[in-house]
Amino acid sequence: MVHLRLADAEEQEDLEELRLLALSAGAEIVGVVEGARQQPDSATYVGSGKAEEVRALVASTGAELVVVNAALSPGQERNLEKAVAARVLDRTGLILDIFAQRAHSHEGKLQVQLAQLEHLSTRLVRGWTHLERQKGGIGLRGPGETQLESDRRMIGERIRVLHKRLDKVRRQRLMRRRARLRSVVPTVSLVGYTNAGKSSLFNVLTGAGVYAADRLFATLDPTMRRVELAGAGAMILADTVGFIRHLPHGLVAAFRSTLEEVQFADLLLHVVDASHPDHYAYEEQVNRVLAEIGAEDVPRLMVMNKIDAIGDQPRIEVDGFGQARRVFVSAHTGAGLDGLLDAIHQRLGPLQVQAVIRIPLHEGRLRSRLYGAGTVLSEAVEGDMLLMTLAMSREAGRWIAAEQGVEVTFMASGEKEQDEVGVGHA
Ligand SMILES: Nc1nc2c(ncn2[C@@H]2O[C@H](COP(=O)(O)OP(=O)(O)OP(=O)(O)O)[C@@H](O)[C@H]2O)c(=O)[nH]1
Ligand SMILES: [Mg+2]
Image (cartoon, rainbow, N blue to C red; front, side, top):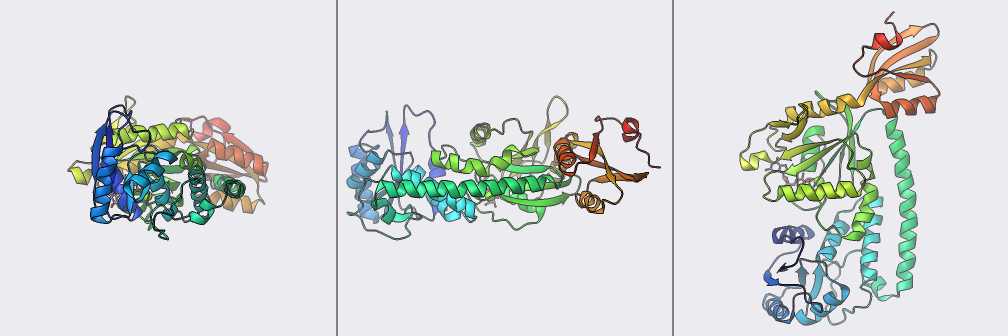
């Protein structure tokens, strides 16, 4: 692993993070070379002196791969490979490799393939003939070298096909989202830096067995569950891919669509590893990505996780309006989770309004669907009509009105249901 401290770097990459990334990719780390420079060397990034040091370390340890903690130009990568006599992978390539290993859903796989091809298409010219070709090695998964060696046109063609397939999958996902709206309950998405503990929280809250591990990007494909949480009511809880600073460009674009879900959530739980010394910087990174994907206006609740690791106590920080801002919890010990549920409930409450829906008495199917949503507060018969009072978001209420052609009246918040439309409990 090669890590350079650069005098003019805006943001220094973190060596510890590179270590975790390499381990997450399945690498065994045999040595680290650190250095400092004013600015990167245009030919080899590290400069000839450092390259010589790396070459010696590669020779003495028998390392098969050199990972550089930066985004290298194709030229720098090629020159450095020659200079150190080993395959060189930059930070982008490493992250792409992890994504390739983790993607399980059809869409996830397509997205990673696309990002890999786009990354590789800029590196078509390099030859690896001087190096041993190891199938399945880090950075060699996915599209593979045969494509690499074929001409650019073919890669361009594959990229086009992948884009088309992804479009289709996206349309299907949009339809699923519409179908979910019908379920009337709010959606809550867990977001945050990779390794913050999103999946662990998802698991303790839902009782689901989602993969949680001390690896970066353990979760790639979004997972959703409809849950009934004691104290917070029914909701759809979503676990999402973790964020990381300087996410390779192709991947940001690719995963933006997966993160579309986040834009439409009613509430975001921004999970933070409170035990990590850099957690404020990570929070910033996450906020930046949220803004990039158009989710800056979605209501947010900060969840400070892993308090057990720093011996902190569960507590809730509130803003000037008495509304919960930061909830301190531990997914491992369960400390603070009751408070978290209360806070979620408090934040979701105002999003729900009471709506009175008038449906013909014989509309049994619609009635049972509304019951299935679990949000019916009361119902009354008026002539040949049934008046059902439900708690739901305005968006869902409007959707039902439009789709079913039924009359929906919203109650002004704070008012008693009887006041507004005089729906009797007669
Ligand atoms: N000490 C402690 N460790 C925790 C806690 N919650 C999660 N962890 C650990 O943190 C690591 C990451 O947890 P995950 O739940 O996989 O994190 P994630 O945010 O889903 O990570 P990605 O899917 O990679 O983005 C695992 O090793 C967990 O066991 C906690 O409350 N306390
Ligand atoms: Mg996860």
